[in-house]
Amino acid sequence: MVSPIEFSLFAPRVEKVALIGSFLDWKEAPMTKGEDGYYRASVDLEDGVYQYKFRVLSKTEYLHGQWLDVNDPYATEIDLNTQNGMMRVKDGEKVSTFYEWQHDDKPLPANEELVIYEMHIADFVGEIEGVTLGQYFLAAIAKLDYLVELGINAIELMPVTEYTGNYRWGYLVRYFFAPESSYGNPEDLKKFIDECHARGIRVLIDGIYNHSDGESPLLKIDRDYWYYHDMHYPDDPDNFWGPEFNYDGYDETLDIKPAWKFIGDVVRYWVQEYHIDGIRYDAIRQLGNYDFLFWLTQEATKAAGNKPFYNIAEHIPEAICVTEPDGPFEGCWHESFRIFAIEHICSDRFDLAKLKEALDGKFQGFAGATSVVNYLASHDRERTLTELGDRGIFDQAAFQRAKLGAVLLMTAMGLPMIWMGDEFGEYKRKTETTTQPNKLQWHLLEQDFNQDLLKYYQKLIALRKKIPALQSSNVNFFYEHIENQILAYVRWNDMGSRVVVVANFSDQSFPEYQIPQFPEDGNWYEWLNDRQYQVENACLTTELKDFAAKVFIYQP
Image (cartoon, rainbow, N blue to C red):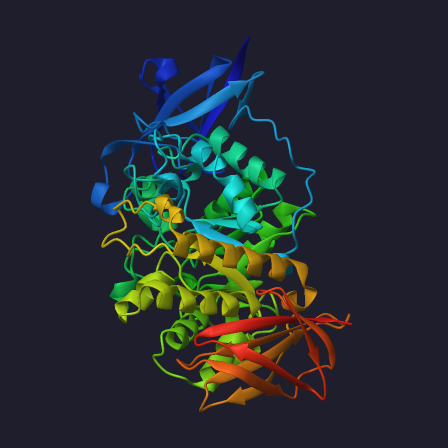
């Protein structure tokens, strides 16, 4: 069956555009410009997969007057080998994939229930034998059962949109609608997300909407229509990563804001086409246009329909102005949690005020349980074992303190996030550049210390998901001893769920330590060591090891 298939390119200020493609033997087909700024051409095609580009008379200042072959800015797939845009025709219609979703009816956790796992898809599966370019999405499916056993219920993917080359962190996006071809094709990514949903795991993606790669097609077509002509913040050159979208730009003739339109289309497409469950918005401090961000997060949430969706800001240092009730995001990365938690498990200092800020973001003005995403490590920061090793703390002592950090992470107000490998003691440093692979060392799980840390994380994640008090915004620090460096706090909700954490940040062990002012007399269960305690006269007596914590659950 042959059907007319329309190709279009929005380029209102460009004077000439032609279509080229595999279906034309790469010869030009003229395109007609409409009053709406679109160039269009129709070609009769059978069902199948095709490659194409546009031949454009560039409007960009430094390319002005040159004929350039550029990929469609809206291309939904890039061929791994040719780097041409691809399109598919099925039943006489353009489609992004032939994939049929299998698990859309699977219930997924609410935002306040999330335990997030940040991963770089290629490094996550990179040590698996036989995995080659273009197979990473499918190879990651084979590791999902590991994540189920760990207990996490959300994955935050570092950028999976098409970038230049075959390995990067991914923060210089070239084609915003296309998955990274070295990871797999669109159908592979949909299958990965579908398999996550089958296991009750939500999938969040990293959205880079501040800037693009320097070879982005929009840049070649007409830079000043979509981008700032110069650096947006010339006084902050260290935080300039590429051409920045101009969200102040306005086309009076067409009555549109070009950058708003393009990125809005990007976000709606990923939510609707890939069924993603949230977005981490990169470099919000640099993007800075809050009118746009309010609109964009609302568009994302509307596109998601009735299913839960989570909009997270990356604003370093964190700022309450970006989160609800007054900001556009439900939550933001909580960098100060990482700073203060790492300092305390590494014995850099003991500062109760800072420790409390880490554990209860309300001290900093954050509103509630979903307002902050806490982490000990991230792709931008060193892992916990690396931080400890840098201070000369190794082996059993390091793993002991890593466990203390894990308790803080899983019992603090806010949502916990684990950087891949931190849960089993991966110690590899960040690479010097964002183009160097840094594969997870899965073989570390063959060692006792690493396996023990993994089991500890599993217990804590199970606790986090089981006990409603830990999903609330309530924290009360009821006991502190500066000299002994001990802090105790209670988490609770209005339905009677209570959890007490007693943490020892000193190098001293206490065989029988008394914790007065305990929240409730009666039965308390010590989760990590499977032991019952009876509290009388508001006092609990227990052993406290050095750099360790205990977690008690009230059993009325």
